[in-house]
Image 1 (cartoon, helix red, strand yellow):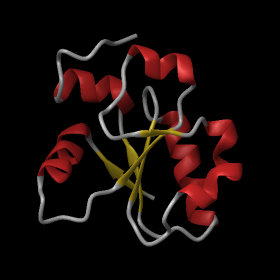
Image 2 (cartoon, one colour):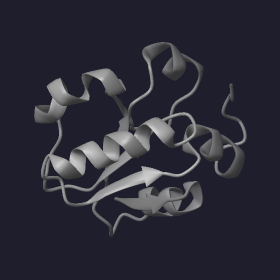
Image 3 (cartoon, helix red, strand yellow):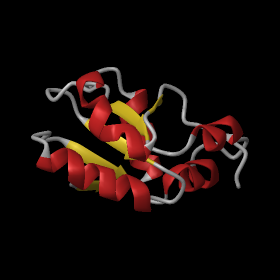
Length: 107
């Protein structure tokens, strides 16, 4: 698993020359009602094993949660399932709100 910070992810998403990653938000639905990174797909942590078919093993995956702890566990799980290009967003959506999008709500 690779770590990526909010600024690095923002640069990646803004670069049309790079293959866009799959943004997997592993938080609970109520959390995404407060804030979310545009383009992220909600797959709550407890449902990830049953949702593997929704992810493309050939594309990079960035796992996202509130502060980066749950997403780190999911990223490690994905690696064990055969995904090879997996990132954890260090600091989660909280870091994204503070470093990239200050207009985003925090909790």
